Image 1 (cartoon, rainbow, N blue to C red):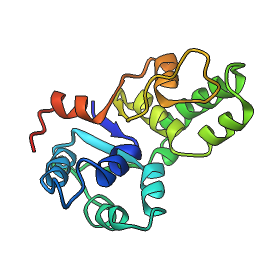
Image 2: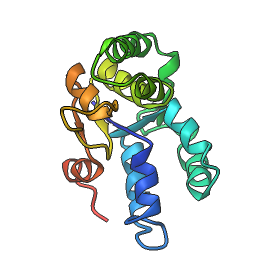
Image 3: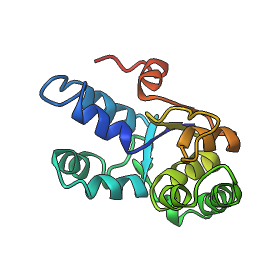
Length: 170
């Protein structure tokens, strides 16, 4: 079991409380958890970060892309090329598309990004999703990771709770 990191678990710390010029120790600590095979991300997240074309993109390219854990596993799961993940993605997509709760525009937006793939990868591998998204109100028309995780019986938590569980100290 590993923690699968959402794009916002990189972007939010970079832009705020763990910015490299404020808390540079966060980033090596996070890399150590990738090395220990406790933390992973997926190809769709890598694409979103790469498209940011900023210092996070540069850091990610240098330290995450193409790297392997001490057990030889890739830091980035090729989710879209893993049949078990694709099967789970189809379940996620069907759940979203058949729901009458969400507006069509929000369904399309959700399915066009990394979010459904993160959930599918976590479901297929028995992993936990790490995201800063919060459980939405019951009457929301937007599709959010925690809501779909709950419906798919996929555990999720935020970055701080993950750090506590695996004892990242910075």
